[in-house]
Length: 401
Ligand code: CTP
Image (cartoon, rainbow, N blue to C red; front, side):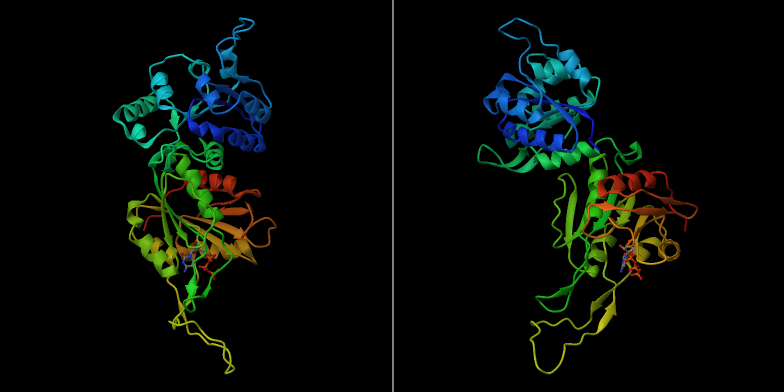
């Protein structure tokens, strides 16, 4: 999705500059063309040689060439870019930017931009929370700059707090998803479940399924990057890292998931049930580890789990409900029956007979079903599918009860 994009990376003088060669490498691997402009202070942390080798382009770090006296055309550099990313962006650079100062090549190129500019501030905690910085951030937003907020974690000072530049992988996800959803999503509250629930047999064993939670995470990330307030209810054991900037609640069983969702549901505009919820659980969970004996196999009494999606659907509600269906045969027919039975507004059907779709893969093939339409999407990455689903949801309405 970044293929062919021209990205101008502006690096200023903070310790997080050490992460930029890896960021450039990942952007290039995603198909983007990257050019780099640096402030003189940035070169105390990362060398122009490294940056030019990884980007495959010369690095601009001055306003003119001191040897020849030749002026460097920063205007062209800015006009070349489809997107300008300033990372790391120091407290000093932020202050200069909002005042319209042009004291180095990064600021000059940024002031010439006609494309979106994303600031990735990185600094120590106390600088980040300082009123002056927060005022400058607010002003930068008013001036039309986009901000990727710093992460919480260990800082160069030895303190722990807000101010870390997000890791390159997370930045690439953010840049990939940036401005890809309809503005409808801006400020919307989105609750999404993901992963397979676990139902205990005893203290060490459980029954689960092959869901990795990738689809739910892709939905959560796409909505969050595009301005929605996101809560993800994910199951334990899900290994996929989620982006910062969203509320993340961990549950284990179907009952825990039901409680977590029901107590929040009314606060959301859209609820997506991407989790693979176990239909049954064990009634007589052993409190001790089940021992192997010669007296036959252990037996269990099964009990039905609540259908979370259905219980969210059939009531007077203000949230739009997105359900998922996994079918292995007569898929569309079965999904249409499920659509009615579950009472959702949109049902996203995954079929197991499509290679490249379903569990433990990065791609998916989905058909979107509403009361009066059926849309078959192409096989695509889960990220692209998530964007298509959410853009489709933005055009839907809540069924009146
Ligand atoms: N779902 C739910 N609660 C359950 C079971 C499923 O909320 N106890 C939700 C899933 O999150 C999904 C949708 O219902 O959004 C359909 O799930 P799926 O596994 O396809 O269908 P089931 O309802 O389990 O029916 P079946 O297994 O018979 O296909």
